Figure 1 (cartoon, one colour):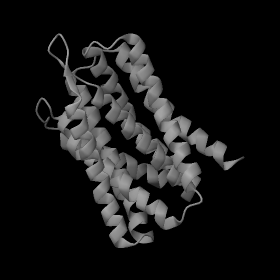
Figure 2: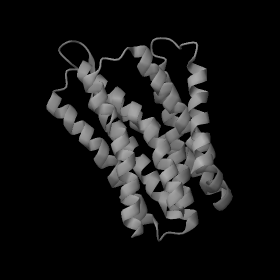
Figure 3: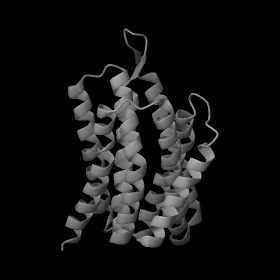
Figure 4: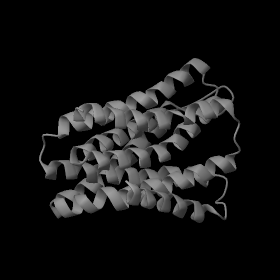
Length: 240
């Protein structure tokens, strides 16, 4: 089978698993404690992806200085996006904070996740599949939280459905972009992009996901959930 079709299938699997968080948020009203728990778990998975699958091969295969700089600039990119989002905040009639930047930031995050899947698939299809499964386990809760937040902020059902479809488009589009554009590039160029994405993802964990999970106070079992996410991804690497 054509490798491009396999990459498309891998990306669609990740996108559909991510999408499932949206209808669940439409169907159920979930307490903040559950949302916090899922975010802690997802943060552990993303941390494991960076620590186990992304940065080790980047450090081994790439030149140290470009890899370190790319990692730094990936984190700086997230911080810049957060600052832009903060400036885009508006206030609704009910006094709740509405931020178009929030949704834009999440979609950009999903595009980057897709690109990571595409780049990983240029190495081996098994690596792409592993990252697709790991990332989708972490992005499905993100889709759930985003949809639930949109409901609380009074976003219309039609726009919420559009947002959910954009989750799919962002991941699949990012994966195809990463695969088609970078498969002919040098290994070092791909590793630099992997390091850039790693910096972005790990900063997302520390500056967005964990603070949001602990918004109403850190639950006593938060550390256990975080380590659970780490452990689950480590187990996946042994199976795939």
